[in-house]
Image (cartoon, rainbow, N blue to C red; front, side):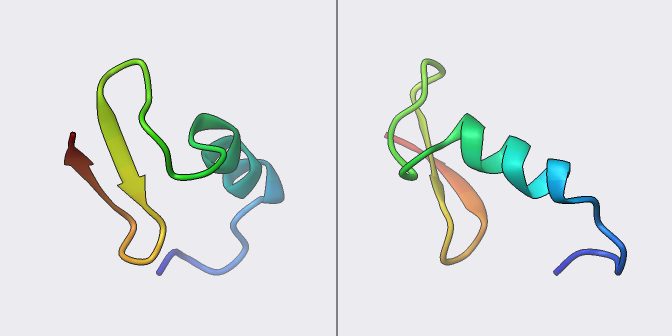
Amino acid sequence: MGPQGVQPIELRRWSEAEPAAGPSPGGKVIDFATGRSRTQ
């Protein structure tokens, strides 16, 4: 997925951005299963 040695803050920042893979203010949803973002 990502390079080895990725800092935990990176993963946490991602989780904080989309806590439950729900809609964001931008109107996009991040599917954690694929790691891709799709439009609502």
